Length: 345
Image (cartoon, rainbow, N blue to C red; front, side):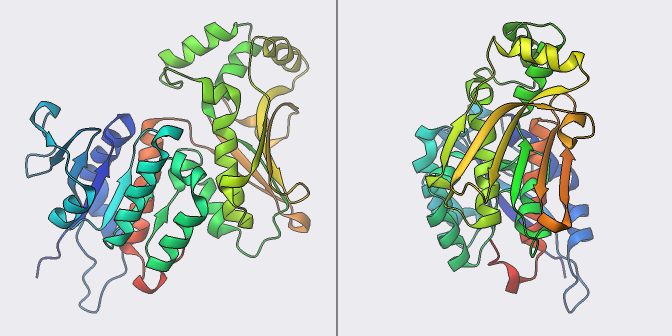
């Protein structure tokens, strides 16, 4: 008997959404077969199938020919109706992460869970705005809430915080989680101005058209807020944030640090010693520090585990492919998991 593919509904079709759709088509069947536990018949299940893509005002129900050109998409219908039509088991959010879009992103998440679908997201705005409700509803529904792509593209920082360090006495987090700001500061340390460094980051596809959230520290702070919520059950939406931006004056500090063998880094921190607060500071880090070793848009997070020592995860440059890969990993996690464990947030 043929095992059917699992239908997936994708919200957002920008660079990250398109990269996810391509990955889904290219690797999902083999990945599901490798990850899944065989059922009583010895079958491992089908692959993943992109059932529909939803844009800002239009949508495309995907047939055998794949995603049609945007000019051929039909007007957008309510998400609930599309879920009923496609039978999607997973809803993937790759929509822009802007505070003005938090409310509709929350409603999309709640709609997915009401219809029995897992949620995987690369969108942070609603996670930061309505953390408690989203966690509570997903847990009560015993459905997945995949956050890997919200805390550093391909870097598995969220996985480490939510599962790999269970039982560890994590006291603090230090992180470089914004590839744009790290890349810009590194270029400034070599003599570039802020404008020159940002321009190069844009040309290389590292920086967005508007890098203000990256350079202000807001993006890095948001990622560490989510990690703090996973580690310590802090209410992410109520945390205080204290930021120090990358600006023209950063150049002199960056150059001085480089000349001495150190590096200037935009470092986001949270600690049990200062509960409820996330800070981003431009910090001088010396050789031997894991935050010193990363290059350009790479990322790193160090978890201070008390007497056990420091656990660090690093790498994973900023890119649409990195975020898409993290979303695919979350999708596979929920599709192939033991159903009795799907309530784990």
